[in-house]
Length: 366
Image 1 (tube, rainbow, N blue to C red):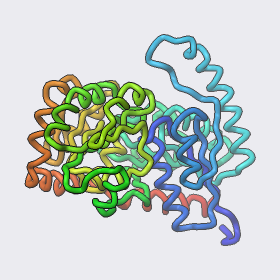
Image 2 (cartoon, rainbow, N blue to C red; image 1 turned 45 degrees about the vertical axis):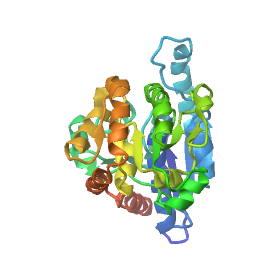
Image 3 (cartoon, rainbow, N blue to C red; image 1 turned 180 degrees about the horizontal axis):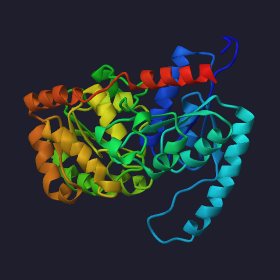
Image 4 (cartoon, rainbow, N blue to C red; image 1 turned 120 degrees about the horizontal axis):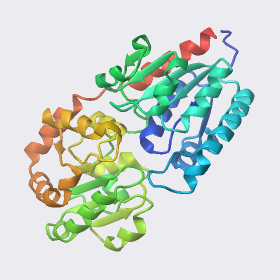
């Protein structure tokens, strides 16, 4: 490839931060290695990607895609029509942008875009964050040159083993620990008090929110602080708990500050959360979502808790176990230090760079 030619990469995936942030991480690494590259993210207009991608300085276009609702709704009847329209939109986007490489990070939004890119001859890279691969990546497998996985267990779900690379889940370049005092100041909290961070994923988690709400009086009584991301859907219900020691937020943009401020994290066990927590070495109570394919969040969290690298509470046991576990852990500095040390062993900090280098090589040989 001539050095004056432009490297163009199209990236698709979103719906949740777990599918979006790995793609952003790879784009950031490509940009570091090849600053003149051009990027285009494609996603849904009403999901996290439409807001977050422009904040990271990347161009974004939307397609009319949506997934099936778990409940019987009229909107499900529109899904087949949306898929067809999204395929046509994706063909037009790809035809105009002319990407050399397309990178799909999973979820329904990646399907039409990666398919369209393959039709026009783009090289295809798929990112699979979870131990149980999503349906989009399994359908797109035959069109991919490489599939980068995060768990050994994922291998058995793909037909072509030669395409698989156990690389790990990419982490954003701007995610890092900062000075704890400064981090706490960003949230208006006291540096002398222990601080809990609660995350239910980018959309929030009803059961975690309910369990935390039940423990708020005791948390305040014990002079503990809390940074609580409820999710946009639940924010209005829980904002009444806001106070000097309780910071209630619908979404946290500055995750570096939030992670740096906390002494203990309570979170779902999504693959991207696990990756980021391992990378930063944070003590965590994992509460796996029971509403995921093949119960993969539980399996992921169980492997980590079995290594004494995290504490696992099943969703069904939240109300009976969460408070007791928090109050045992939060002042046990030796245990918190051990959890930090042990979970760091699960980190694969070079994943984004490995994928970025591979994408650049593919762009060069087209």
